[in-house]
Image 1 (cartoon, rainbow, N blue to C red):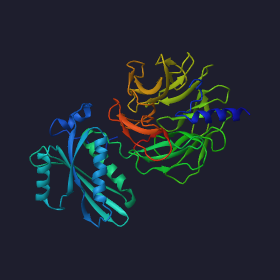
Image 2: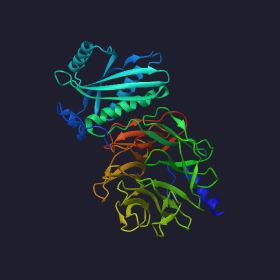
Image 3: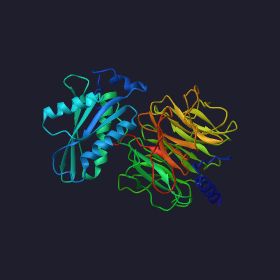
Image 4: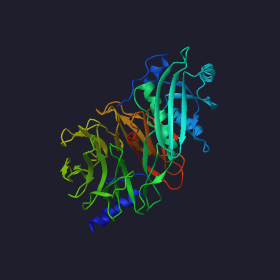
Length: 447
């Protein structure tokens, strides 16, 4: 009977945007470019100056492009670079003829005149069920249009968009020293009340696909550090239990925790060996460490208040979490032994902490009439608001570059996933389609 009451409580909470068990009240592969004009370096400084890059259609060097892959690659790579916030894309119609240095020089001269600082020349070979591309990156500010970098990629014919994402990420790497985030995935919850499934899409919302099809309520997907699996809470067996599933592999679902009461809020340790989780098996929601390989548990919190929503620091040495031990829920910090507990936010109603991959910022949700995203330094200093409506904005997840956030928003009515830069600018709708979309989790860069 106790399990049934807890399951019903979470099921009711899950019909909203967030399932909260305590909710009593509603490395680089290449060196970056260090030559050319200052803009090559300034784009890493977070300012408004962007690098103008020309991206003509990719040049077909082998096979027949009956499906328009050459246009797709240029379009998707251009959209990826625009989304990065670092580039302004100078598009071009038609492709540069292959093996024609004079045509290449003429094209780059025209693009440079139009204001382009760099040029991306893509070469595409279609070989049956394989796509091969070579990207060549040029400095259009130099008199001889110096070749900056070149790299080859290969995918199946069905993965043209991923090929473009890889090209875009390499361009970002060449200019910043850190790869881009286009070759990543978003997992999220989709569905009406009473039936919520986990879905997965490219970071830009393309290629959505169901990950679960169990007809139950599935909540809180979280990517593992190796981007191979997801931890989540699911009612697939009738109770709120913790599971691990493998969206890219034919492996059975793994049960992680199925104790009486609540099993929720999984958070992976940076090395992927442990999960910090919320369990109420001892009568009160507390935070535990679960060792994946052995299933052993270690309890971290012991308090009459509700402790939940743990999240690891990128160093693996601290855990932020939510507790109402001092009244309203606020964000707290502790070490991985459960010691050194410190409250880092005060005033208001604060939930859903998310630690930046760079370790310098924690984003959380504050309820003040509506829900909005806020950020704070890990020591509790410099709290600042990131969103101010419209609607509710909550449940953030970090991109691996620590410059972008995805989050759920009701600004257009029903819940959808949006993305923005850390300063709150340039919000972009990511998910479309039926149902409501909540609880996004941004994957690490794919292997």
